[in-house]
Length: 182
Image 1 (cartoon, helix red, strand yellow):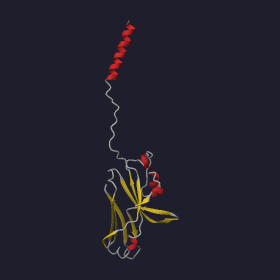
Image 2: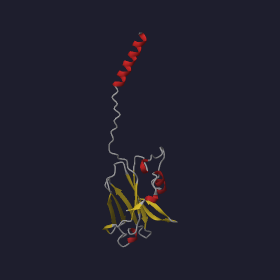
Image 3: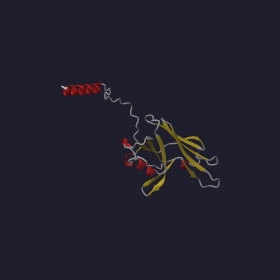
Image 4: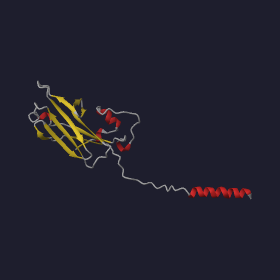
């Protein structure tokens, strides 16, 4: 009889403990804010603001997440068949007696990106269109939360040198063959 009471007591305690579990296993899914890498090439038509300032601006298809970052690289040449990319901001020195320079800079918000090309006051961009015409840029929209294409996690403890285009492409698993021109 004592053994039956012991089993009934243990059964009652087990039932009570199980019935008090308030875990309904309901998973609430919110909005997915993970960004998948977006990359595209542009050959923008810059708008003249002044003789020393030209600007291009474009809206993103949808707003970025606050933690996303935008990097813009300018093609400054080629190495064989491969383009050579330089991270903006970038300064190109004209090489004249005035020591003039042309600055390529960008900024972005969650809604748009802007590229500005400005020169020193003694160097007219209008008179030197090669500094703003037929330029190619690569725009990379990257998740700052450490995920790559398709949500693949980056290796912990690894660092990326954003000045080194090839390092960025490797770190974020960007397939260059899929980069389109916008």
